Image 1 (tube, rainbow, N blue to C red):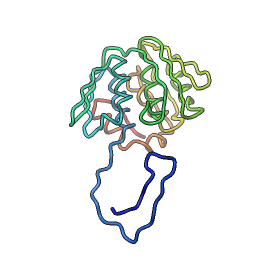
Image 2 (image 1 turned 180 degrees about the vertical axis):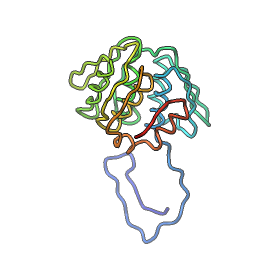
Image 3 (image 1 turned 60 degrees about the vertical axis):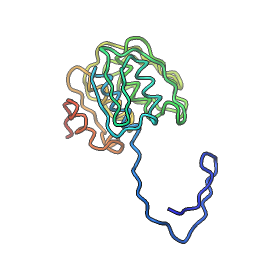
Image 4 (image 1 turned 90 degrees about the vertical axis):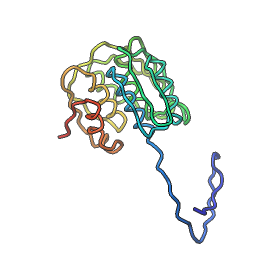
Length: 215
């Protein structure tokens, strides 16, 4: 566009103003957290999900962990496809700055680990107090203990639908993920958090076979 910008990749970005910018065409990059959320939704429900217009390079740590959990993932230039096993295998994760495992996927991935075979250990290295959502998962039957920045999740075979509250955006997404595979009906309150970060989440999940209603 004609801007004078330097410092990419450093701690300081320097911009020198110019008189005029020119028009350009630009394609908005895919939302890597939304992509990861749909892959995890397929994983916890023993499903099969194909994502179009997703960039595998942006979510490689998520793909790696899903494969470690025994999901089969196919990546092409046109799509990412996940085929889930009958039951996920527990895996450990540590959140890291990009390009490491994203902190915004921590709660969503933890949701899947609630039903995985074995014990998962999650270490949150980016933000503090980001495990508030776990109390809601425990109300659904999950077995989770928190100590500082570490969450230990012992997988269970079944979780029960109930009324839970979204504590934040990604914690709310975790509620939805677990609800997809829970027995009975789950009602998620405070969904304004979820709607802030996901566009038409209910319609997209309905397209995959979920039964979701927004009041």
